Each structure stands twice: as structure tokens, then as C-alpha cells.
Length: 304
View 1 (tube, rainbow, N blue to C red):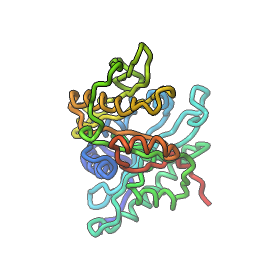
View 2 (view 1 turned 90 degrees about the vertical axis):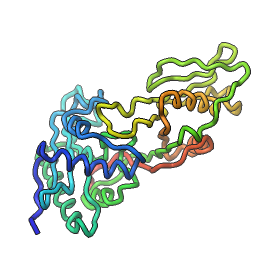
View 3 (view 1 turned 90 degrees about the horizontal axis):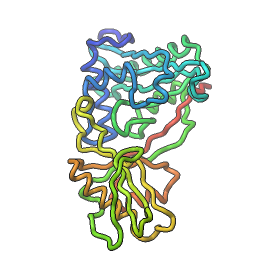
View 4 (view 1 turned 135 degrees about the vertical axis):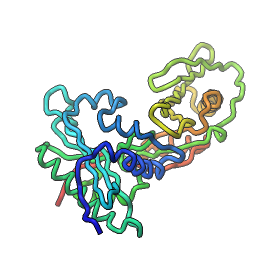
């Protein structure tokens, strides 16, 4: 059996790396995959992270290879130490994502490959001499961030290496647009469509006063980046004025959003909520959402 080796990513690895990344994405979000172009672009910069990405001073991608096949890979970031960088990111090193084949008969050495790659990641962080070491699972795909519960093999590897979960947990929910409340006329209430902070905003008005709004983002799957998942959208913001609680405004807004999403060709809608906000999660499930997974954010290296 050829020996495992860990080495820097080469452009010739792009198809195998994309396949490995898509296998992990598929375990989190149904029907979504990313293109080779998306993966290669994300190795160079993260345009969606317009605040933190300019703070990155170094990026490196490592792969574990056996039998000319990439069986594990990791992408590491080093953040600058100057005053322009936010305090949390200043002079830190991070495993931005780590993917590895789970143990299987076809890849009997995947555990060894993952451990070898993790050792190389920790060695790189040590060479950078950063003040703190963090880890995550921020693959370049919608709703794949933190460390999803669908990746127990990655969680086990982080924990064996000394990473501990120190942040919060978020619940990722999904609904079929067809299962959302139907659009129904509501006497005295009209909807106004505008550009919001996180997508298209649909605001409910009555007697000249805003009752609440929902924002939906249908630009998650830009055609030059994603090969599948074009029918996916997410909730950027949802707000109901306290005075309008109990009046069904929220369900009416979901109906308006569903009508708009059908016109956009979107058939699935994502939502993200803190696991501590049980009331909001219950409101979403009552509107047709299902829990997709939970993801744990904030992993810090604390060995010993």
C-alpha cells in the first residue's frame, strides 16, 4: 500500500478536492453542490466575508494523498496582528475547514490520513506563532459553517487534536416553499417590496404603519459559482412589531414570501436560529420548517 503523504494543494487536485468538499456539503444541505471554480476561488479569497477577509495575511491548503487520491484536505488562515484587525481575529490562526473521508472499507486508512493531516495543520499554526488557534467548517456553500452535527468524524478529529467547542450552537432549518403558508388577502393590510439589508424585503403595512417584514435572499447560488442548488433561498431577516403579535402577521408574511419565491423559481427556504431561541424555532416549525441540522460555532485549541 503506497504511503500516505501530506503536501500543499496543487491545481491538479481541484476535481478530487471538489468531490470531497461536495460529499461533506451533501450531508448538510440537500441538493446543493459547488463547482470547481467556486472551490478554487475560495482558496484565494472569500468575497462574502468582506469584513474579515482583508485581515487575512496568509492562506494555505494542505491535502493528504494516498494512491494518487486526495482523501483529506484542510484550508488554513493566518490573520494579521495590526490594529486594523478586529480584536477577536488579531494574530490568530484558524483551520477554516477540514474535510476527510470517514472510515470505510474502500478507504481503510482514512483515519490515519486525517490524523496525519491534523498534525500538519497544528505544525503550520505553530510555525506561524499565532496567539490563538481556532477551527471551523466554513465550506464555500450555503448553510455550511461552524461544525455541523452531520460530520461526527470531523468533530472527533478536532476533539482528539485538542479543539474545544467554546461558542454557541445554531439550528439550521429548511422548508419547501410549497409547505409555507399560502398567500391570502388580508383586509386593510398591504405589502411593499423593497431592497433590504439581507435580500428582498417584504413589509406588511396597515393604516400607514409597518407591522413587520421578512427578507429573503435568492442569490445564494450564483450560476458562475454553484452547479446545483439554484432553487435555494434563505431568510435574511424576520421581524414583527410587538404590537402586532398574535395577529397572524408572521404567517401572512411567510405567505407573501412564498408567493415571491415561486416567481423566483426557488423551491426551498433556509432559516438559521440560535439553539437557545426555542420560541422562534417553534414559530418556524409551525410555519412548515423542519430542522435540518445543528452547527456548533467557535472551536478553540485547548490541549491538555
